[in-house]
Amino acid sequence: MPLAATETYKNYIGGKWVQSKEGRTFEDRNPANRDDIIGIFPKSSKEDVDAAVQAARKAFHSWRLTPAPIRAEILFKAGQMLMQKKEEFAKLMTREMGKVLKEARGDVQEAIDLIFYAAGEGRRLFGQTTPSELPDKFAMSVRTPVGVCGLITPWNFPMAIPMWKMAPALVCGNTIVFKPASDTPLCAAKLVEVLVEAGLPDGVLNLIHGSGEEAGMAVLNHPDIQLISFTGSAQVGKEVALKSAEKFKRVSLELGGKNCILVMDDANLDLAVDGAVWGAFGTSGQRCTASSRLIVHKKVVKDYTEKLLERTKKLRLGDGLLPTTDVGPVINETRMKKIHEYVEIGKKEAKLLTGGSPFNEGDLAKGNFYSPTLFGDVKPSAVIAQEEIFGPVTAIIPVENMEEAFHAANQVRYGLSSSIYTQDVNKAFKAMRELETGIVYINSSTIGAEVHLPFGGTKDTGNGHREAGQTMLDTYTEWKTIYVDYSGKLQKAQGID
Ligand code: UN1
Image 1 (cartoon, helix red, strand yellow):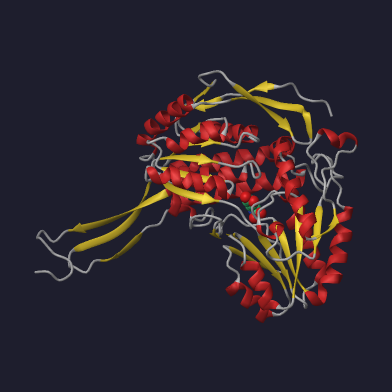
Image 2 (cartoon, protein in one colour; image 1 turned 90 degrees about the vertical axis):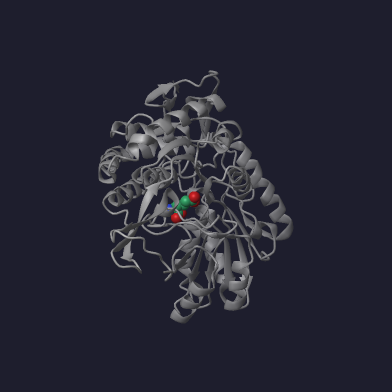
């Protein structure tokens, strides 16, 4: 494939595309072919973030007063434009972050779904009215915007996740400073271009490229940013929470996962194999929702392992743009080393069934390819069964019975997603009750959340917020409770006379 010419991109501040103040830049490369430079992007500093925050503050005055249905019209228009551009954006996403084209299409589609869902809120944003305990008095609650939101997003869903944050923030009347991952700046720039073209007023949405350490930190530390929404690792998330606490910022965190599929002895094994292949190796395992543990009843573990091993060995690594590819590259060389470190640990504590190393043959040597890796005989307490690997690696954990399966499932620090394969309705309902995750699937993999339901998890996966669904509104609004006394006299609540 001929490589396109390298373009230089800019930040977007106060309605203008501008260079970073210091003029420093960084390169964006294709993880399937590191020789392919996708673009040159500004490496922003605190000064750039300051300018973006100033623009966002200024725009907030009029944006918060723009009626929500009118704000929503811009989102509807952007959604329609995204539909037109779906194929183009999916292709550039695959080139920029590696996921296979059909999954990149799904990522763009998730952004489209979310923007339409959030736009619908322009004519809802419901509050409550309720009787007052006093005569001639009216009581209600309304949602009001929070202010300037700092949105810090990851590379693994480079369009869906930014949209999970931007669309609700905008419809609720907030303004934005958006700092996307430095591995996927182009996807971010394309989303911003669409929103701007759809009619967002200057300063409502500002885009700052750069590193987490510098630009991300400046967003976190800025006193005029009222809300931080961050998706990334638990380690960084903790720092985000601590820093934000110093300035009493509202923080919504979407962090790691160590998600499991439970396979009971009555499960449809072929279906459970399909779920594991999709959940563990889709997006090369680089999803917070990836199925990185397969907790299997001893009665079926041998059969299940054989079936899954056969399927895993058949997976074809390659450039995600090729229709023959099942599994694309991982995002960068640093991540690949990290994945391999975990696999080396796994080799000492469990049985490696297939994979277990980077794949450097032929053309693929130019990319960050890691062989789909399956471990058997893994103990629930093993490092590879406890820590988030974020790569194409999964672990089969044999268990004696359902109680042991629930125990193993919950014996991790994270609580994002889980699933059970069983044909017994009683077991299914027990799993719905016992699994300590924010999302539970029955007879389906751990991935595939839909935008109109809450997304997020328990324990170290976050801090109690949920993205998407109606719950997204709670992140991006403050409740204001209003009492209107039309009695013309002083009335006291709680029966005081
Ligand atoms: C993530 O991995 O960070 O449920 C998000 C899913 C997708 C979203 C994943 N709809 O796997």
